[in-house]
Length: 207
View (cartoon, one colour):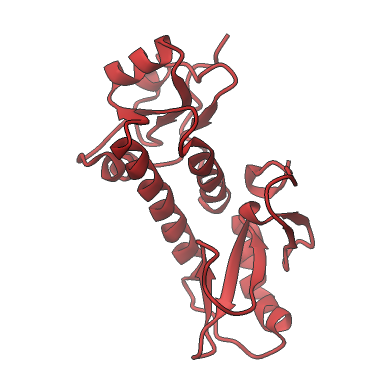
């Protein structure tokens, strides 16, 4: 298991070395950074910005270390500017990424929200991922089980889940297997590593 709860599965894409921890792991477990024309460091959460990149583990402590120890300047071999809210900006971008992917899954019919719809999907064994709001009622969340051999995501807020499903707030949601489920889980794991959270409980364990 890598930092931030990201499994060390080296079968998906090339590996990169974290400039803060020295660990080598698949790119999806890291955050890429680039230097803009203004000499400032910018997070490249999507991994698509041009230029040479530096990688930091999707882990809040690693990101803070990279900023405080001026590791970006060392990695890029030049003096760079780092915004004071860089770590929080990474968290915001990762949360936005998860919300956008969930929204796409909802539009394709692979994601549902609401206790009854989620329970039905779980009962039919159609769900691969159970999502519950970190600020939802622990008692209410404990009534639903994580799918057998499935995944649990419990570090998005009710407001964030609501944005994904076009509602004010959402406490319970589920994602079917296939489609975008793998990408949602990967991006959510990156967010978990960067976000200071106790996961808001883990639902009722299957079995």
